[in-house]
Image 1 (cartoon, one colour):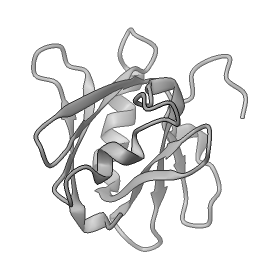
Image 2 (tube, helix red, strand yellow):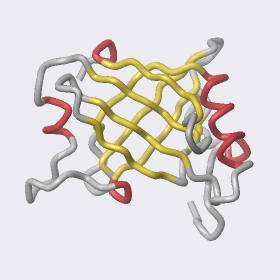
Image 3 (tube, helix red, strand yellow):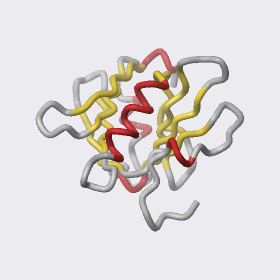
Length: 142
């Protein structure tokens, strides 16, 4: 899927302060839902989705990716602001719920899925994990 089908907004939920990555999709109908469907026609749950941010060299932006943990296939990629992603990690780390944040996906039909996540891996432009800039729950080994 093309990155220009997506827009991303990173902010805290006004009701409870939960850091949220809101991703809106405006591409062909049904394509995003297809990528989020499991082999048994169910929808991927939060444990089956990985969230990764890869910084770009000499840029204030990077690529936010959601992947299917079981197959390794990309669900989507979208350009995102590095400062926004850093703010999300900082806000999530400062919360009492062990770094929880949400990913809210809204498709072209206006239907939304919300994933509660605690892990967000941040990589530099060379592919090296930036542990201090990532959300990695205690007890998780990479």
